[in-house]
Image 1 (tube, rainbow, N blue to C red):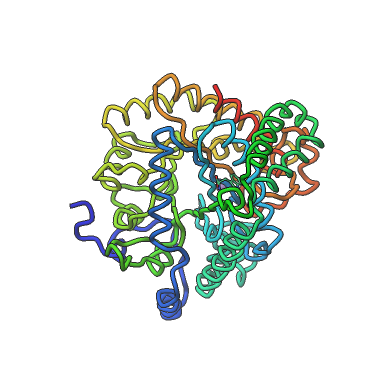
Image 2: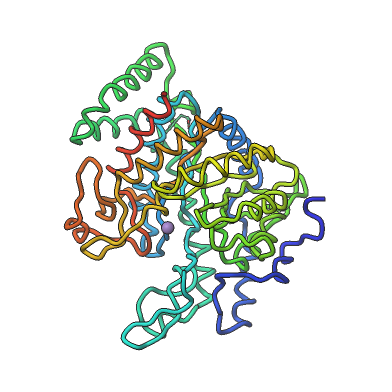
Length: 448
Ligand code: TRP
Ligand code: MN
């Protein structure tokens, strides 16, 4: 019953927010046809594997670590940038796996996170009004009419950049770059050089002992792929529905439809209207679906959306990503959890401690404070424990680069440091050290 009257283009008869206005409709249709003919980026079997892991995480038997850029950029689709992002996530994952004593699902906001929702369709500078920048999938950030005019060629460019990113991710994770020994060696480096790192020494030493033990009893990374390889999943916000539709494919094994643009896609706080096109599209694909929920939500609408997106109440299908902010989480999260318990919804709860804690610094940068991020995660864990629900994951905007976009952390980045290397094209990200700092702090919460 769930997917009745659904087809990959049925969303087109519903209102779709946050879409680009392509000036040349004919060219747009042609591009979509080209993408439709190209191979899928991921395979249905991988998506099912992920769903099973997320089902475990929802029930406390695994943990989801999702992170990456707010908005990816074509110009940053390079081996070093991708490698560094993956590296931090793997480093965080080792710490969390050991401390939490459960598998960690490693997932990037990567290989497709090229489209952004905007609060206003246009932007005015010096009396000139132009379309807002909607991410590299749509237009360019420069403030000129040429740059800001949506260019549908960018959809195809996004596809190829995603394919290139996925290719190198698969190569790295299979080719030895994700080996436990290597990742742990990087963590030791971090612990040694970081001021805060000192307090993490005990945990790092424990991991060292476990690895040494495995080695002396004969587990050789050469012969045990579990030691040398890791699986890395991709995700992005399913925003531009024409693009997602073009990558929607029917699995030849099961006959089921999947959005093969990524393993998991999520739906934003701004586009999840019950009768909107995004919900209509997502109800028909069998991927795991993330849903962001912020303070502005309507609980009755959320419940109805849940019925539409997961009528069979399948474990691993829904990842609810809450983003309330450190001050509001105590006001909104318990109520949400109570309602979900009452309805018996099977979901994985994940915490996005980034988006509810954004503010403008005195130096006029959009930033986030490490302390606030830490505080929201702490509350998230406490509230789940109090309600008897499972805090099953975290969602970060982060990069492997040494940027100065968020204040605080072990390096004690201050307001006046933000200008040193503020590189994001959208929201401020944690840098590599701040991300690792957080991993060690979350490790404490997972242990308790
Ligand atoms: N294969 C295991 C896993 O993915 C162990 C592992 C290998 C691992 N390399 C890793 C864990 C890097 C975390 C990070 O969980
Ligand atoms: Mn963001």
